[in-house]
Length: 195
Image (cartoon, rainbow, N blue to C red; front, side, top):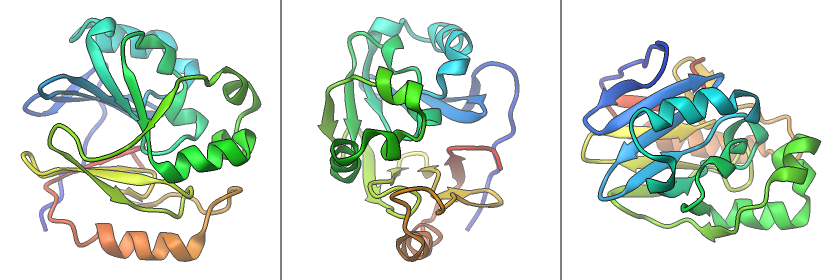
């Protein structure tokens, strides 16, 4: 399996045709499919950087879909930048959010502010959803087969994998998820963080 490690540069980095990455501690991805899609929105501490970077390629009100790989605060913080978007998370994440918002988001301020109406995530626009519980109960990876990109959230990193010591984490489920995604024939690993 060929592995391309994505290297951070200032601003949006074009990692494949119609796919861009912004590193703001966690990674934000912008895709131009039939519609503009954002995968994860980064921490709210990086709001201006995310706003300016996305806006350099697409008007914020033209982003049609925001997909969350999971609902930890460093991946959902800028949801409010996309006023016309539909928001998607896995059913497992939506259920966890309903059970305990703080344990799901892991930050009190972000938990208070997070308010989008979430729709259950399904395959869409060439992105296939792969359930990868472990880091969180409803963590997912997204497979973009056209470019052989695995958007792995906090399941798999270039040099490791996501933590399993949070409330709602499950180390046994993570082992199974890692075994699944490590078999994926990706050329580009588009992880949630660059570590």
